Length: 424
View 1 (tube, rainbow, N blue to C red):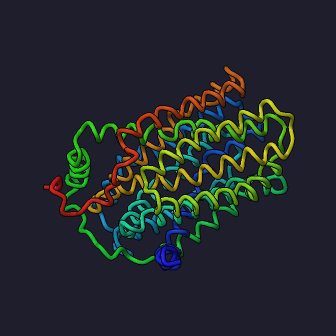
View 2 (cartoon, rainbow, N blue to C red):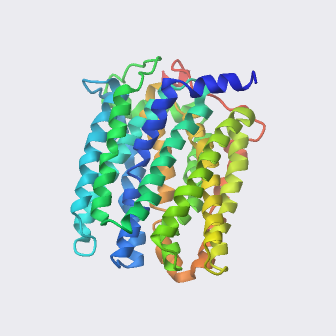
View 3 (cartoon, rainbow, N blue to C red):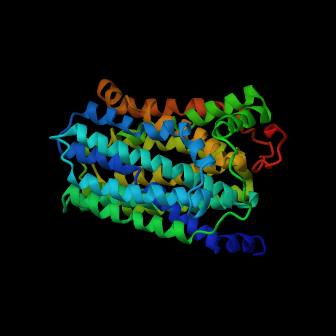
């Protein structure tokens, strides 16, 4: 019981409640330009290859480190450096998502793409500010639970903008569904206003040049160019297999005969419960076994979870098989995402959180966007069974890098001190 009390105290704090809501705000726009948009386009009978390449709309998630120094350097005149930028982007997202209610995918793909790119840009910028706020506000001992709390909010938003949106789309127009989802951005706006300021405030870089140059100098100087390069490669490849599955899972399930309501109902119940269990359990295990070992265990489970979709290509269509595949994927996703977010935060310096975390998360997004973009064409060329086996192989490069970037027995460094010698 004594070991549980500190965990409960942290989880009951205003800080954790704010992170839960900010995680929701960060997760809400993601599927609105990816899986949910893919389902809308599938309904409109847009070509499968075009749907796959539409994932490139998420390029801002990959390129966001280019403008992240601006968020480190410039401070809005309200709510501070992190919360000020959060509020600006959240208001913009509310407007941009509402504008999707005016789109007609079959008739005007270009307008749809422009609107979706605007959402992706604002969402990526919100993520820069949200990631920086989360990393700044958490103490080293809170990294695991803080990451899990934020991921839980994020996954709840994915449930709402993914599974529940699919169910609503069977009864309402897609345009009305997007309009309703736009209103949920008010949750993020109110959470930003209510969230506490980080107790350890850090001055913004003196110049834009410093905001661009010093984060990279500190990151590569901290443990050497070779080690830093291996970390970047690990971040790029660790979730590649999961990204390939995520890019095609909805079109696959619709293609083999499952309805949007079936998918949404199972994802919204068993999928959500599995995600919650994975995130909460992952956060608690993180405090017991550490970030490194969690990456080994959870990463392996994530790779194996892709076999759930492979099995659907061999089994007769039945709700129980769909339930097992979705539950397995969501549970493992909850586990591994909590560990991965904690790992990324542990690699950041408070003085340059926005830029350094944006660099790392941009590489992670590359798996979802650039490397996974040909997923639709790959599935057409190989068939669904071979495609899902290939996703298992795509998980191996990240796992093979673990001995170099997260050794099993190594002590994981917490957030780097602002007085680190690499800043000078």
